[in-house]
Image (cartoon, helix red, strand yellow):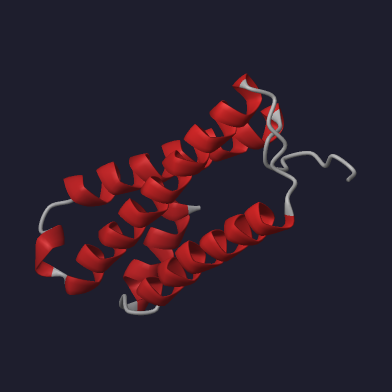
Length: 114
């Protein structure tokens, strides 16, 4: 299989997952440090969604570090399907939680998340 930039099991893929993990963690920190965030149910759900994104990304970072350390090939149809479905679930949950926010908060949060 042709090795693509950012695909699982490559150094570039590991760097992208680490970045995804760091951005999710920083988003949680920024949203949790806002005053009165717990009064808005949508923000609580958004923090929970970003927590799920962080855990998913961290798990994939661990898998990719293991694959690079022991020269494992992650270009397996089952593994690639698992990565795709997992990314789809975490991203769709984030999008659905963003739709719960009032319009003025959704713009600010989407800038923070992206």
